[in-house]
Image (tube, rainbow, N blue to C red):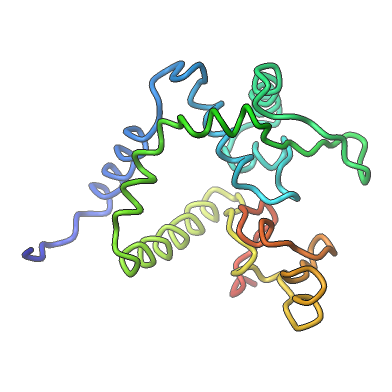
Length: 196
């Protein structure tokens, strides 16, 4: 395959927006709105510290009220559950239910997931790093946090003791040991390791 000149930033942005639109369901797809699908995916992928209405609001770049209405609809449909947090009675952790996991098995965005899986690992790694960098720049320009995973976060504290105790590491931000799901999950408190 012959190499070609890269697209202009504007054309590449349009192509990425088109890809995002292609991977989203039409209104009411499988009984959920696009926002509800986004929320269900988010709660399935977020770590336990980020599975809150506030975490979803930040991730979806929306108001807490709008995020709350989306979560209420998912609770009413039985796709997620709310559990009050001991540390703050006003907050609740949102967990995906068995019905929610079954719904995710019919996720219209699976076409994008399958397409990404077809990429060679090296190209997927390059794309992962590029998307992380782009997300950070856009989030900073909008005065928002970029979401990421613990393995690249400045608050991660590793070491033999942390690994032996919890099978993961220690987060200095939440003062807690992280399990494997926390380490791989999206985190609303993420700050890139190289950030100041």
